[in-house]
Length: 395
Image (tube, rainbow, N blue to C red; front, side, top):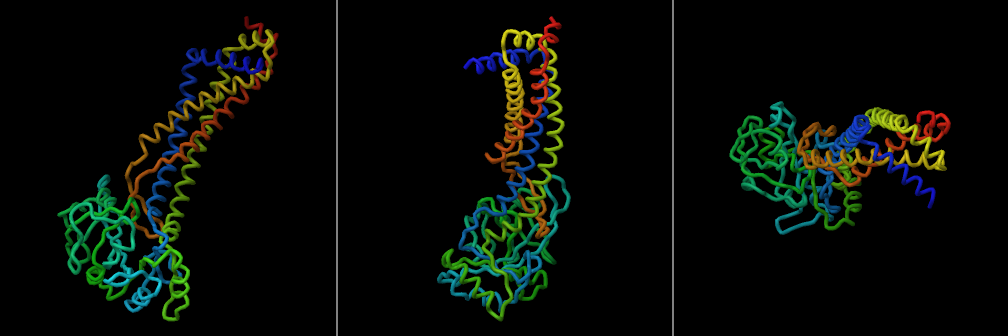
């Protein structure tokens, strides 16, 4: 208890002396806050992108691509092949037919609202079952397009990020001007980054004949996936790759998520080096201005270990304060911020919102803690090794 009392007393004296060192202390706190804010902010972009790519994918939803294709852009099916897939006994059915949507995927150029620069926006041709093979998809403004007409509906993410996608406006698709008649939401998923039209109409606009690039299907149960996959991959009339939609989009998001995460850790590491030197400067300054105090305390019987721990505690508390400031800044500035970026697999834009998660905040505080401990260690050891006689000469 006496040792803990010594630590508490020295730490208290150190914290009370902060006003005399406010310049160095402020620089340290701001530096650590900057590290945490940048780290959390950049990684919240990766978390938001991944969330948009993987959210709300039901385990009974599957996607079928041509064998060897890693995205819809390089896949392809004929009408006959899509019918074979839709007729699989594992595909769920309604009185209107199987819950399978053969789809066409193309990219059009539209200007971003924020910058005016052109970006690749995905335009998807779908069949009626598309509304049932995806989860939580609903029209939130306007109406669904009429089948067989040159009309489109727009995802809420795309409508917010790209110009010319308001209800009543028109977009040029191939040789046609198509009106925007509705806006849909899909619980924040990647579908909200797309524009949808009737697949047959889109085929005619792009001279695609009766070809498709993927088939989305709702299965009778999640347990039916393996049978569905085996029946298609063993069918000599097909050469296909079958995946759950959740797994497919997780794979699609992997490259971009890894790139953003690597960037975030790299920038944070470089900034952390500067923050460590700032912490070292602050704590060395604390030791220099408190040389007499430390010598007097040592002469009165305070142990060197207590001096080390108390200085480490002071450095840690300053770092944690900076970490809290940085975490709060990152949360209020970045969380929910809407933007779009390129999906490296499909070369099209994905609209999403930055997502500051509890895990990211914990990781940010861990960085602040590490900076504080490293920055306080050497000054604390120097203070503990300071000869009492040398320190008392400062009196």
